Length: 182
Image (cartoon, rainbow, N blue to C red):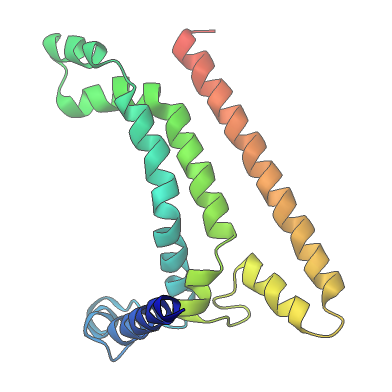
């Protein structure tokens, strides 16, 4: 039990540190706000950053695995024929790894849409500003007579997930057809 409290204390300390570092008066946040005009605390930019950071591992893993699965002999052959490394990447490696890139994008998108914890922790739950679908559903369930609106959002999120899945399959089939010349 004490270990759970220690973990919770570290988590709260990290979330306080993040807000103090990325807020307008923080070291990083102050510099970003003054020089670039970017504000993360309690803004949609912070919600996008939090969702992106949480989705990043699900995005990177399939991409890395698909790039590692590309036959290196094809890349070497292109190199021996005089292709520059950037051209080898864009004409050989990337088209062959495209199904993995698409899978990573769909996984990252799904994670970002459903992100709850990082958004609540770092940018709060401000309707119309930092609210994700999952935090909106949570807020609606907590309010009287919010069940119908919450159900509508659940249906919308299922529709978005299905549309992303269909789009991913379509892109993957199209990429496979282009690779095999069909």
